Image (cartoon, rainbow, N blue to C red; front, side, top):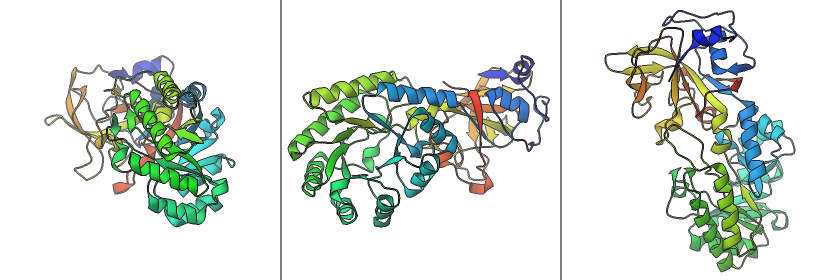
Length: 411
């Protein structure tokens, strides 16, 4: 896809002190302070940024939060690991979220800076003894996940059973997702029965949780896990205080066809009623990607092109906000932004990041205008999840700005 920036500017987009430039001309970055914009093109016309810019829509994020809060039949907690930026956290708090799924003490500190009374679910199944003690005593955490006997022993040493809920995480063998979380976390169903019974016998309130995998394409995966949870609870003889269905709700990327989000909610509700025979425990979920994925796009400058070999070099790459796309089959939708002149039909290009490492490349090839050139910009859609959260400072790159935009590019 190609968008003529000059044409858009002529329709009323603001221009800043840097103005616009002729097609293909390198432009020095301007040290300006970003404010709110209607579209990504308005940001480009005003500033011609040479550092990567994530264009963030508070409206889109708020609308997605409302879908979860209104549609999911239980408690909604945000998985902070997906995007821990202050802009995102503030928007979710304003939307009414009060519970946060955290994986570290640092995430707790970030959230508390925004919402001092935030409630934490510490659902990283493996924690050091010091992390447990600090979470329990400093941050008032009263809900912890575990998936083996060693973790249970640490929790028994630190936490008072009468005020703590232990959440046993289990796994199934089959995955319907891009990231299969069962390769690292989750007790077998047999071990989950033993852990659940042991936690109950020690006096803790008990719950179960699972994660069907990130970017789960099949709502029935939740039903399969809920059926297993009912069997585990029955075999252990333990009544659950809650059942947390984890995350895994998908976001829209270029190569995905997804069921509606609401179909996941209904599948989960119906499965809990069916498999717990009308006595389903209170439900909880912890979305990350599905909440924040669509609220940001990435605007990045083209720094060099080798037309003969079909290679494009950008000011951001896999050591920056594009890391996840080097590790999965996900592909972001992308469009080219240019000042004037029509583009040639698309050709296949390999996309490289700015670092000196040959690994800094996106897998596969991307269809881009055959005459892509230095001074053009690319905009990647669906960049709200695992972008700022995984960016590094390798080779001195990784300086990413977040700019408020009402309508960023999205699938």
